[in-house]
Length: 79
Image 1 (cartoon, rainbow, N blue to C red):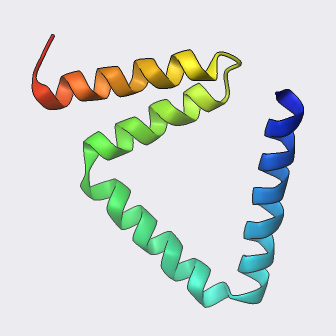
Image 2 (spheres, rainbow, N blue to C red):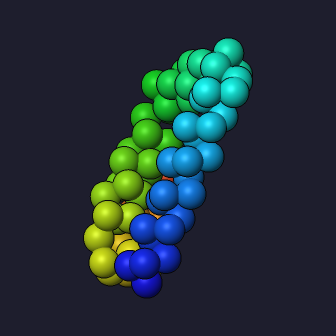
């Protein structure tokens, strides 16, 4: 599982680097749009932050489920 994560992360890095070198204007536009979206919605930003933390841990599945449960409870107002 660790090798797969390394391969996926490496592929994403190479892909994003190639896109940035070949199409700098589009990447800048994409970056601005992503910043605009994340800055405008705090709930979305919290979910992405929690997801990032979960992805860096070995127990990804359990963490991912916990994050989505917490997010769903906040949205519905449950305790």
